Length: 74
Image (tube, rainbow, N blue to C red; front, side):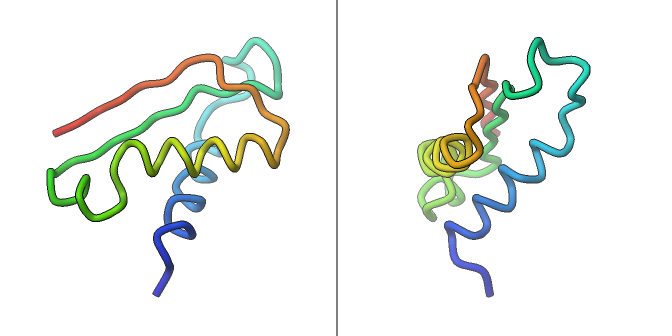
């Protein structure tokens, strides 16, 4: 079973692969997409803040710059 950090890193990596590079102004920039579908998920350690933290760590390690973000709940 994956830890919370591993799941968050995997999700950040999946989102990065889904974003078309040609749609971004520079290949080292990205748009973050954060989503929590239930209140229980938010309390479980997989909430928006935890996702943002995982994405920040990933972006720092990959020398990426976030240019926008989307937050979706519900």
